[in-house]
Image (tube, rainbow, N blue to C red; front, side):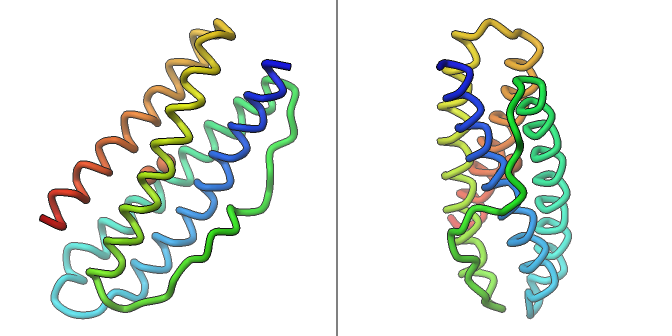
Amino acid sequence: MKVHNLIQTLNEALGWELRATNMYAHYAANIRGIHRLQLAPMFTEEATESTMHGDIVRKAIVKLGGIPVTERNAHEIIHTTQYEEMLVHSLETETQAAAVYADIMVEIESLGDQEMYDAIEQIYLAELRSLEELRLLMD
Ligand SMILES: [Fe+2]
Ligand SMILES: [Fe+2]
């Protein structure tokens, strides 16, 4: 039962990572204006990071005997060319991710798989760093 719940929450995280990969790649391609210089590379980096996170989560799901989702989270990716809007949607996405990983941390802890705990903790900390970075950017 515990493992079943964990697989479900990990799949939720995977859906958000698949969505984040799409969203950040979309924003990197679409950003206009002078901020493109700095934000396009940042969005590209976030897209790459999301792919890496998804990969780690997918492997954890398989390790637990689950089947990883292949569809992204259905939450709409809003098209814009305005960097302010992109940052708002990025902040929303990172907030969601951090919340899901916080849940996963609690569930894995009770499972006692140290290797998995460490791997997910690294992702969780990366989400918190992105969150803080976005907050500063929007200050
Ligand atoms: Fe992530
Ligand atoms: Fe992230």
